[in-house]
Length: 362
Image 1 (cartoon, one colour):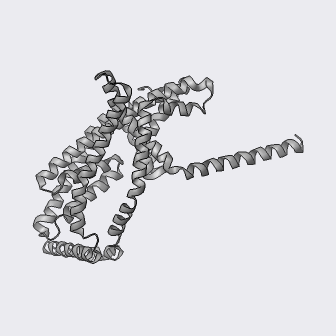
Image 2 (cartoon, rainbow, N blue to C red):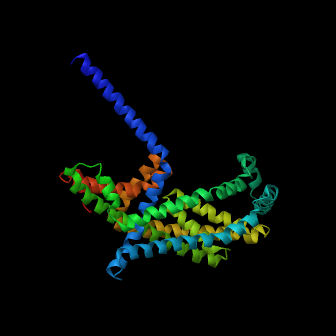
Image 3 (cartoon, helix red, strand yellow):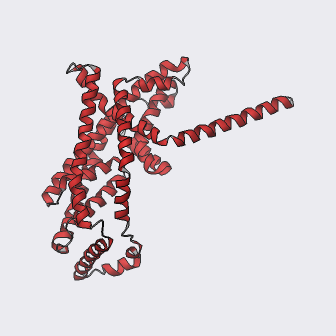
């Protein structure tokens, strides 16, 4: 190998590294667009069974079926927004979001009631709380600051919503649009295998996301019934928030349970702590535990194992490992990513013994 070959190799390596860096920089700059596409793909997978039902059973034309599906999904989204408005208004009033001093006064009043209650029961709650220095770490301005940030982000949210709906419409209208975009970068010899993989992945993930919706509906019904029995204000909205956060495995239910307790307690600021606030908090916790037990031992194993055709223990390990490696995002994408990888392995490495055992149920 002469010096010319070495120099050409170095130049090619530098050019390749520069190209990879440039590609990642480009992808970073269009992160929002990639997020819109990802959300649109999920919406299209959820809407796909509805479109197929309208085409096969109701004899709708493709475009009419897609328009009807999009209107149905959009109407569902608007209904959720309208459902949350009363809760936001009431909690804004209860917590005095625009008055930090009053917010601090309300929380301190609730804190004093808690101390009095625990002192009666011979529990030195105040000393335990002081040892943690929790009160000194509280930033009471975070709630109104968050509200202001939320309002300021409504403009960009509206742009994102329009973009997602627009992309979702064409993904539903032309189911091969996304597939054809991928095939541009695939050699002709691999097109058949990739097409088979894409079709299988699309079917499995569509079933997975529909199953996820059923999971949310089931736990939402349990929470709603429980909170209504307890007598919690805005029970339906609080139950939906708790059920929606259940999408995030392991972490989501904990956050949802804390949110349910917080909203219940702040809705009763000014009431007697021992007879009303604390008692309702205990019952809300019981409702949360019942919902989680049913979800973890009945609905999740049945729905997920049938939708993605994987063993419940297999799903648990995948979610757990993905969460350790990639955090919250890893928890959310673990099952779809793992399912896609299994399908691709089965299509391209079907002769491998390990792959045969791993993908036996597919």
